[in-house]
Amino acid sequence: MPTRVFWGTLLYPLGQNRGYLSHASWLGKALKQFMAHILIAEDEQTLAFFIKQVLLEQNPAMQVDWAPSGTSALRLLEKTAYDLLIADLRIPGLNGLSLIAKGRELYPNLPTLLITGFASLDIENRVAEMGINAYLTKPFSVESLTSCIDQILAMKIPLQP
Image (cartoon, rainbow, N blue to C red; front, top):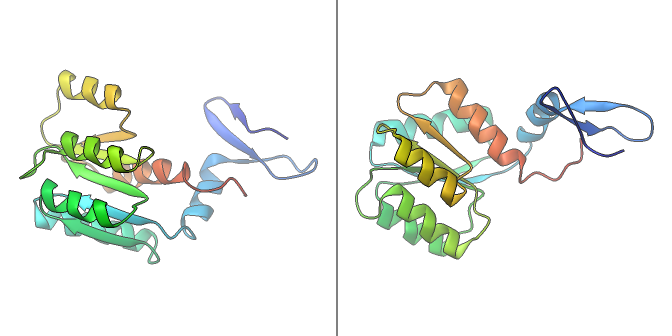
C-alpha cells in the first residue's frame, strides 16, 4: 500500500489490507523512540535552556547541545553530524542564515529550524530560497515549537509504523 494524503493528513500503510495510520498518531509514537541529536545555536541562554528542556521532556533519549554563537555552533557541526540544527537569526559570529548555509555545505541534507524575533518578508524569502525546513517567530508557543520539530524529525524517521 502506498502512502496517501487525505484532506491534508498523511496516511501511512499498516500492512496487508489493514488500512492506514494517520501521520499524527504515527508521529507521536515514533518520536518518543527516536534518539535525535540536536544542536541549538542561540545566544539567549534562558531561551536555549528552555528549548532544551522542552525537547528532553518530549523525549529524554534526545541529545541536545547548545552553542551561544554561530562560530561555536559551526565548530560543533564540524565535529558532529546532527539530526537537527535550530538556529537563531541574530546570534554573534555567524548569523543564523550563514550558519545554516555552512552547515549545509558540511551536511547537504541537514534539517534546519530558524528562529527569529525579527520576522520580515525578506527573511521569509531567504528561508524559502535556502530550503530551510521551518521558521518560527519569537515569541512562540511550546506547541508551535514541538510541532515544527516533530514534523522536521519525522522526515528522518524510517516509515515503519
